[in-house]
Length: 164
Image 1: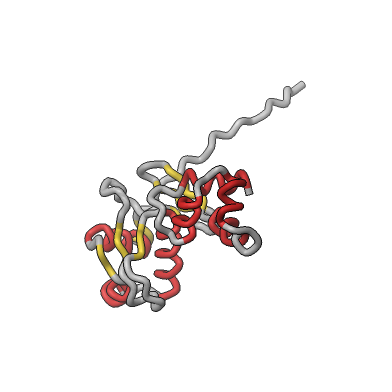
Image 2: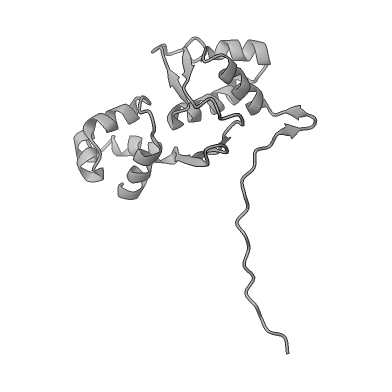
């Protein structure tokens, strides 16, 4: 008789996608441009790299929430606002971005950007002070997270995900 052995599967290692069809991916080209030009405008990326507007918007916003980029000007127009690249210089490969997280291949750090939606939803019903008391974070931290100015948001978003 055969014995039924339970199969154990090794968790798949995340590796960056270096080339697609012989060329670097669009996200990698945008990432390289941002690394070379630490202060940039999205309009420059659209004209130089010939990237779609919605693709660029869907790439820059999660990186801003995750703390890789910081918005310098308060212009409402996305194309004319100025961004500063504040990620570490040793991050060569572009991060993996989906609707819930931004995963950096080099540092192996995952930032839960879905927790920002939880925070913004909670702000409709509670004040920043109530959220700070409930999560154990300071009011200043909550305020900086709301305005995407917090330097390393990974741990703060983790506590928000657990407590709210």
